[in-house]
Length: 149
Image (cartoon, rainbow, N blue to C red; front, side, top):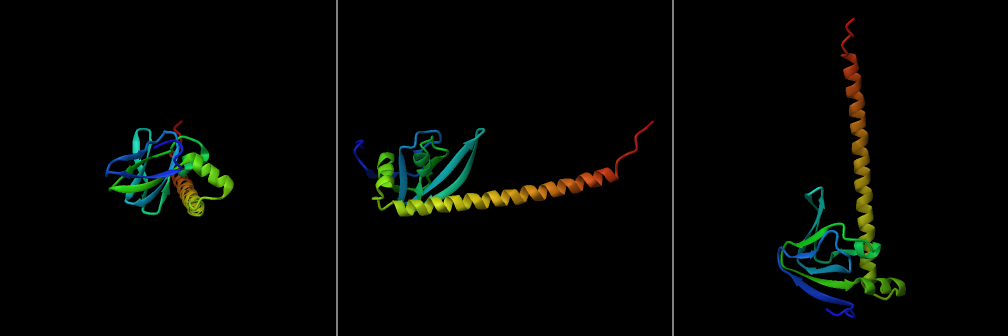
């Protein structure tokens, strides 16, 4: 693929890596058909954070933030993607002239909504745990043994 290519299609076999966590984000991927597992490794533990399929866009966060990839992407079945070069995306954002902008924006909004929902869920969970802990402390205080003299 030459550096002048704005986008290209590419096929990945089942088990083949589209990109690795920590790599430079030089393309975004639009899945034409197939399925991809997004895996994040933290403290040598792998965790599946998403499964994406036809029509989904992935890899955009690293390109837009100009940061290394925060997760790896592995094809879970034969998969065909459109790869859009980072420079093409940036120029399209400046000129508002690439058909992918509307679905990309929709995908980003959806991701932010999902993150907000997750944050609210975990805030509620922490609040409940704090309440349980307070209750347990009160029970323990009721059963406190008198100090020996």
